[in-house]
Image (cartoon, rainbow, N blue to C red; front, side, top):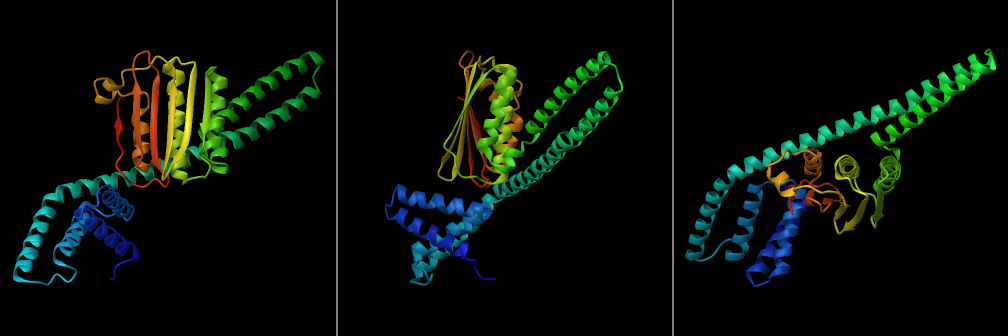
Length: 326
């Protein structure tokens, strides 16, 4: 099977970057190496694939493209090949771990997608099916009220008012479970809708600022929405905050989100190091970010509020996720 256009592009990019770097190319050449790694990751290449790519490029740089030459060159080529085999063997444990990690991430993404579909089904049932039942109850009560004296009709009207409150609460619950605005209009309108609902319920001032204009992939939008939702849930339950600021920006191929509150804060170092119970939904946040290749930094301290800094690739590529404390 011949090489694909992507493979040829990757080899050419890596060759040129290595030649430039060995010739003193500096930061620009290192950027080329980074781009090659990003392309390899998107192509789902493993550690051993990258080792083979590096060996091929190094042979070309040191011996020429034909690999032929004097006896010294042939001896060097043999040593390079042996060193490549040795190096590849040392990377085998990393390769197995990497493949296991990729499989786990794929399973996690599939699980998240399944859960979101189930949440969507439940939200539909709450909004549409329960709503239809309430309409039927309203009609039945209206029919009963026609045959009742005015005193009893007033009591029926009171029941109707209670049913209207139930309907409003079910509608709000449905939108928080899976807001249609997220599917229809995208992340920023959905976050504004969520922030308004939480602010009304909690009496906390929540400001949303966004320069993000274009939509991104559904898995990224869903993951960021859920993380912001969990963060706001933490604020209302634990932070004792009066103000929250959410910011969404585009930074090249990344989407950046910051969530800050002026609440009581917590010991982020102890929480992230495992000395304290990992509550606050951080495990769920990390899992969602891992599934789309995101990163999260947490900065907090007693009496200093909390700040979450989140970055994800626009298309949710599979890169390693990390979290760091202050």
